[in-house]
Image (cartoon, rainbow, N blue to C red; front, side, top):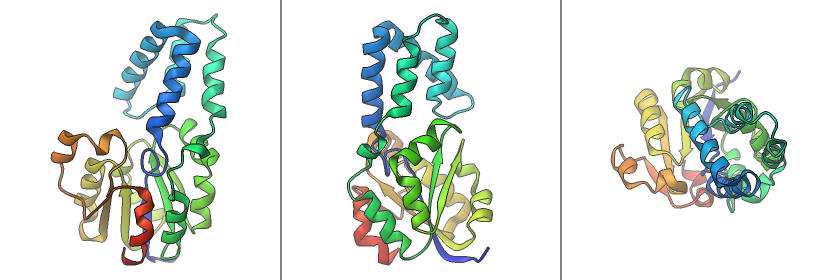
Length: 222
């Protein structure tokens, strides 16, 4: 594969897609269908799974919950809610335009953490997968993307990279490895980006923007 001058790597949750709003809708559905106690138990299981292997596994938690309630048909309503959710409605304003603008300069690769079922499904249903492919790139999903830079580089070789992300600590970890080859763009969207302690604990990004749409004005300079 030809080495590109620059490859743009873009996160999904709370970077391109308002995952906080999706989870608020999901939680309301949980309470509606299985009640407050069921909601509490589901998130307890979710947190247990999140600690090992360390990514958000919504269907895994639901499967584990179903083992505790094997005769409760209401669980199917919850899985159906996640599968049929209108993710395209939660794409941030001007996110598609930002992807297209970056694609005019180099391939755009969506790089996300998550499981191998729900996360790809969400990216595809939102229209973001097609947008990335139209911008000369594709989609990669890992457990921890900051530990997979060698794989990213093998699949999308470039002289330099730009990472667009709402989690400052992930940007910092990637910068440590790629150093000057990486330009970090911190997007101040979502709970992680507004957690003062998390932000203060990591070095500042090369560029900070308030919303993903702001990339429209920066694309030519990145």
